[in-house]
Amino acid sequence: SPVSLTAADASVTYFEISEVGPVKATALVEGVFSSGNNGLSMCQTANNYYVTDYEAFSYSLALTFFRGKRNVKVQYHIRNQCSDADGTSWTDQFFRVDKASYSLDFTQGITPNASSTHYYGGPSDSTVSSSGNSGASVTTMVEQRKGSGSPWRRRTRVRRNSSTLASGTSYDAPIVAISDGSVLAGATLSNMRYREPQAVRVKGSVISLDVISQRQVVGEGKGIWNHGIFFVDNVVSNAATEIQDLRWSMLLEIERGLLIHAARQYYASSGAMPPLGHENAIDTTMKTSYMSMMDSLHTDTFTQWERAKTYGSQLWPDIQFDGYQVNSNPSQNSVYHGYWNPHAHELLEFFRSGDPKWAHDLALPLCWLTTYTAYLNVGQETHDYARSGLCINSSGDGDGQWHRSGFGSDDYMYNLALKHAYVLRPDPIHRRRIEIAGRTVRGRYDRSVPERDRDIYLERLDVARGVIQHMEAGMNCAEFGQAGAGRCDTWFLAVMSEFIADNLSTGSICQNDIVDGRKCGQAQTFMQVSMMYEFFVRVYLHYGDLDGGLLNAVTGIPEGLYDYGIDKNGAAINYLGSHAYYLDCTT
Image (cartoon, rainbow, N blue to C red; front, side, top):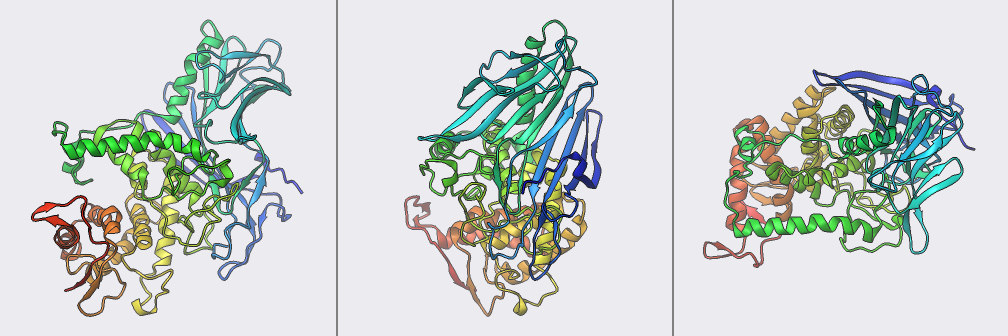
């Protein structure tokens, strides 16, 4: 039977003042919703590690306040934190949620009566409209509904109580507001046009961010991330005109906020990143061709979403295995956790060029989707030592079951972008996820387990795709975490000592956890180039020449691949040649 959980059912389990500066301050609150332990909102969990039921729904709320403004930027994340986390099934502990909202009551400042007015923006980009006088029971809502129809299409609408004032496919800048002629207040949500079903709503003088506005399956161990903003201002002359003036600036603040960018050579000279070139570098034929392809792929992503119907708060903006996949509705999407790190490549282009499209259009939202929704998200629960904060399988389709119903390979994490995302947009909710992932990999790759006794699926420390992605998560914790960061750092240094002694001692990448004799079977060449080498360079830039052996690997790996893995005509690379898929070396 339905369960209603309100603010009265919310308890606080964690609080911190995350940021206090001259311009802004951020507070973080975390907690759970409880239905009084009657079992209706409990996780019915039983595995080898944990048998006690716990509350299903938890939240993270980060509120940012700005000097000289009366705006409140909101990150409101909700989670279905149920999961056995043991791999038997990733689709059975879901919930159907009718509505989830975060609301602020402005009644003390604006009385909802015949002298105050509701406003909405959506159908027109250039104006906002009045929906009529307000009252305590009058509701005005702009909603991105769940799409439907044959053929399927997106649906949006504006409602005043039960009357539809406007409808369409999507609105680029949805907004609701209320004003009494002296003061105005309003709100909007980021990327609502892609993240159905969501709405912004004002009832009387209570303004709500409906992060779920229609019945929606929320899959096992999944969170839904949301960025919104509430704003308040004095009315100078005309409320509608002034709400319109605020409308786009508020939306841009939460969708496309300002980013810090430095000259390219600064990143290398600071020692934080590999060289990205210089501002006055000559555009070579190869670079021009590369950028042309990057631009083409970036632009095509927008049409890919439409072809595949990649719309939904647990789905957008992920990508397909087949970029030209055509689906008839969103449930058919089988998405792949940012397959091979397009978000990392796009963020590198932001660092190189400073063009914000490389951060805002795809990369940052895809980082949020993978971090909070695609990877297993059981909040702060500790019954899982092997998967919380990590990828659990490689695909998955079905409403709310994306990233859950695919086959069981857990090495599709593709998380090279997350360090860049945190540097560009550091926030406490992301930091807490980084710390959870760090806690998980520390427990999963326990340094006290002898090499020959390690579980081959969970504990083996070889230079393979899944392990390196987990080590990337561990280093994120060591570099950016606060809670447990010292333990992450100590653990990570021990891991690297083993890697250097066992796997990198020849100046190349020997893959196996235990390297016997002089045989050195290497990781697949394309994985070394696309993922593994970048990881070891990052470690070197952060820690230096660990154990006197890391620099030898950082310089030796590309030399070995150039000498033995690349097809050449004399000294020139044969770009269309047959390059080595795999190297099996004798040292």
